[in-house]
Length: 265
Image 1 (tube, rainbow, N blue to C red):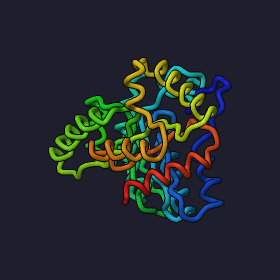
Image 2: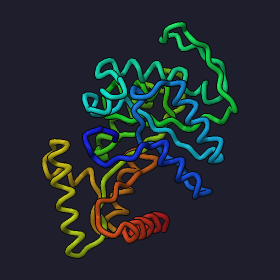
Image 3: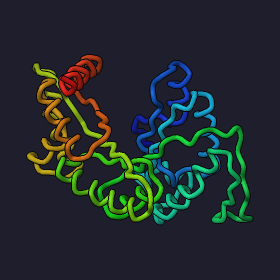
């Protein structure tokens, strides 16, 4: 998240361009890019270029953006109000621009008509946000997926049912549910310390009681992680993303692989 107050953050299109240059198979995910901070034609050109150069590996997670009053938002002239409307207007034309279609940008002076080339396949576009009605409606209207975070299985199940209703009303397929969760896997003194710090930080950030924080995170060994993953899958999650807060990230990844393998037994 680009805030502009000295907090470490990498500009995502640049960072994923570097990743694309040194990889061949991994998916290049935005999770999520704040639409109101970027002119839609420039964003479309950047995503189209990244798709073209990477062999169509982009997944473009987008949202209305957090920290709208931050120095970065002010510096790029992004408005702090009306973000939902701006996101919806961008989503109306963004896929077509990436695909090389002519699009009139009717909300800009002169109503410019833009066509970008070389055309590329439109990447999957999950919509980031909460389980609010507005986010679910935006996802059902424009999204290929819904990208929430820090939800319990029961919250996911309820929201997914509503999302299915909204998608059906629009004659669109049910978007996938791509849930992001924080995790600290394994045991040991350093791991337990990282787990306690994660639980405390998330409790403060989301104003959640401790018992709920444990429901929206994954901790323990591979067996416990597999059980939690299965619970989210049963609730309707189609893809689970891990924010790894534990020590030794490579070991954390190995433990996630072990949990996945347990699910397939």
